[in-house]
Length: 366
Image (cartoon, rainbow, N blue to C red):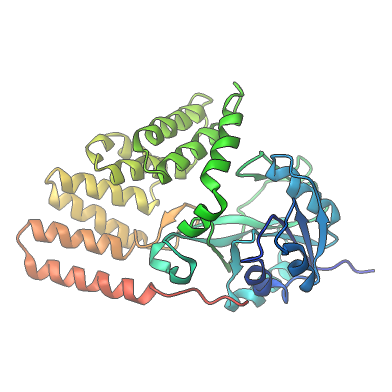
């Protein structure tokens, strides 16, 4: 018997307020739905079964990867698509997802993730989002497993060669997990800190632990703690003669930017740009640094470089607008400080028009 093409695998607990929106966006695209429930008491399981899901009840063992791997054992599809309940598939991309699974020769595929910020899901808007590519579709029964108790990652099996670039398919997922009402309702910060601090007690911990802790303190606006931890994360990679992931550098300079301490960005940001020359966010922060030092001609060059790079480098975690309206806004500030009010007005109007264009609620089904 021919196996199903795509198995959707999820882990859930008390997601009755959002699970239908997630499953409604994807159930017509996948061939089976495997849900591992770790103790819901709000009717989540019944809502999942309404969409034909196979629900597996499993005790919570303080490990997201353990729960995900339970679902993988049950999946029969040629491909596994993994989602969280706070994610939605873009309605316009449903057919592209299925066609990619049919046609691709790769073992893994990148999808486009859009991560929304703001107070409420109902007012979520693209101009407040960040974006990056993540492996969300991979071939089943080849040994792929999840690792790490929190902020789990897909572990590549030794039997599968890692040759060539991973394809990025034109499929968007909208992620609402960082919306303030969601974070508050689920008390995510407390849960995440508990698991991460437990992991940090391990002397052989992965530098990613320090990065994720830094991210938690950043979201809590505890800038000094976040800055210390992200530098420790960077040192963890450099100490092993390994290249730190690009998003580590983004977080470092984002902390300085938000804290109003961009004067501390030099000369490290130049080194980071040499490592990741097409990372638009780093060029943006460099431009802010130069502007704050009164080096307006050099700052203008940096912001113009942001516009050249644009918004389509999904390999980096990037704030929406760094290659468009944010760069234009700061070009306006440079012109303003140079006494060129007409030029500043043009940049501001262009920036505002771009914001209005992308300030919309995403089109998802369900």
